[in-house]
Structures are given as structure tokens and as C-alpha cells.
Image (cartoon, rainbow, N blue to C red):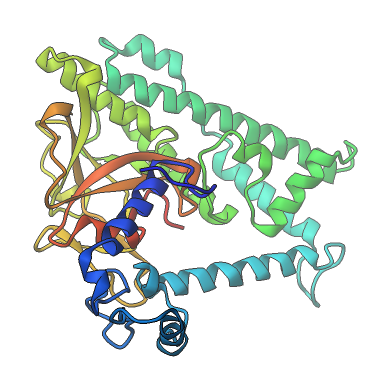
Length: 387
């Protein structure tokens, strides 16, 4: 378990390296065996281990047999290369966009950068100007404030802070456009962000992690507000299905599930973990009522693999299908000593965005017929906000 080098920075890195070692460090390595991990489908791409020979023959074999770079060599799906190339292209195009002249319009009849920013400012103020939650009034009307109520009330507080900053900065920018205020550096950054369709830094600082462009982010924000408004109409109960991806702090909702389970069964909270059961239902309308044990959640996309709704297990991704929408999932609190993930279960990390890393939320348990190591090396994860 001792790993040398600076690439092991968290438990998932260690798990991936251990999985590589489990795959390669076996007796079959001394015989002719497939060196591309779990390469069952791509028979046209293969790299076989030679029988024991001399050092020079090993080098010759590598030079002749390794004809091209491929994600399959690492256990990844061919779609990984599409994702890599797409990210590269987007980065180049964004750089080009940043370098273009912002002082004048790009053609006859086209709007100048300032005009684009002004129009966007007006549009956002019209769409979000009246949005605000009266949290104190809601608390006074609650007969009982349980774990779920605390989650939604905290979400409303966060949204109020973000909305206040948006309104303040946009109204300040409007005064700058009107010549009533001198353009500050912060106002200039906001103006540039509005023109380039990017989330302004002062908003991003108070918001959830997101890789969306501003226009898509605003639509996403409206949906988040709508979920809270619907809950506000019936605050005593949780929604039939909670769009967990629409929460600023989804971890708090998962903790609330364990808290409710602990209170109901008189269990110790620190000995509970979350357990996920994937249903066959894809939409909220298909659910008749709230979960009897735990809570129903929605809003996940699977990256690196797909979910077979018929058999209820993980399967290999289809070509060019970068994400697979997940059905509704039932999350419940379970005693840690009753959890068994040794057979037929892939412990799938869940992240808020495709960037992964610091946006980690929790691990979901997904059923699999294939070895869990296959999905570890394929980088399979659940993404909450697949942009």
C-alpha cells in the first residue's frame, strides 16, 4: 500500500493505483496475456504480453505492437478521447474569444460589447429582480423544524445572499453605463463577464461550483429557485423527489436523511452511512409518494459508463454517448456494519461538476455484473451538473 511519487493525493488515486496493481501483478503476466485492462469489446486494439524473453526482445515487442495511443490502454472508454479533444478545442476557442477587440462591434448591425452587457444586465434584472425568500416568516409558520426543513431554510439563505449580490452589482453597473458612477475594476470585470457569457467572479464566489456559460447558469438558477418556491408552499414535508443537484450544499440533505433515520430508529448517527438503491423510474411524475425509507433524489448523470435500466446494472458506454441520465435514486441511512460492497457493487464517487476534484459529494453504490475494477479504471463517476 506504500505509493511513491506525488500523484497520490487522495483515496481515489490510491484506489486506482491499487486496481492497476491487482490487474497486472498476477501469474498470467509471465504468459501471453492481454495488457489492456478489461479490454473485452475492442478486439481490434490489443497489446499482448510476450512470453519470457530477453530485454532487447521486450523493447522490440513494445515498438512493434504498440502502434497508436489509445484510452483503452489505460482501461478508459474510447469516448474519453472525444472528451479530451472537445475540452482542448473549447479552451482554444475561449482563448481566441478573450483576445478579440472589445471596443467595437464585430460587423455592421452587430451589437458592441457594451451594448451586449447592457442588454444582459436589463434581462437579468427583469428575471430575478423580484426573487427573494422571507426565511424568518417561514420559520415562524413552521410547527416543527426538522433536519429536512433546516436544509431547505439554509438553501434559501444562500440564495438570498447570491440574489442580493447580483442585484447590487448589476444596478451599480447600470449607473456606470448611465455615467452616474465611474467604472471601477469590479464593474469592468462584471461587464466583460456579461459580454463573454461567463459567470462573474463575485457571483461565482457566492454560488455553487459550475462550468456552465452564464446563459445556461441563469436558467439553472431559476430551476433551483423554483424547487425552493415549491417547497415553501408545503414546508412541513419534503418534495416527493428532491432534485439534489439543485442544492447549494447537497451533503447537508444526505446528512439529513441519516439524521431522520437515526431519530426514527433510535440509532447512533455516527454509525450510519448512506446507501443508494437505483429505481426504474426516470421522472418525478412516475413516483406515487415519498420514500418510506429515506428519500428519493434525482439529478445525476453517469460519466464513463451507462446505466442499463432493464437489468439495473452498470454497462459499457455507447459510442459518442458522453453522459447517461440516471433514474431516480432512493437514498437511505444504513448501519455501517451492515454494508457489504465486496461483491457485485461499484462504489461510485459523485461530484458536482465534470471538473471533479474539490467538488466531491459522496459515494453511491451501483450494482454491476462486471468487476468493480473495470469501472475504477474507466473513471466512472456520477456528475450532478453535467454541462
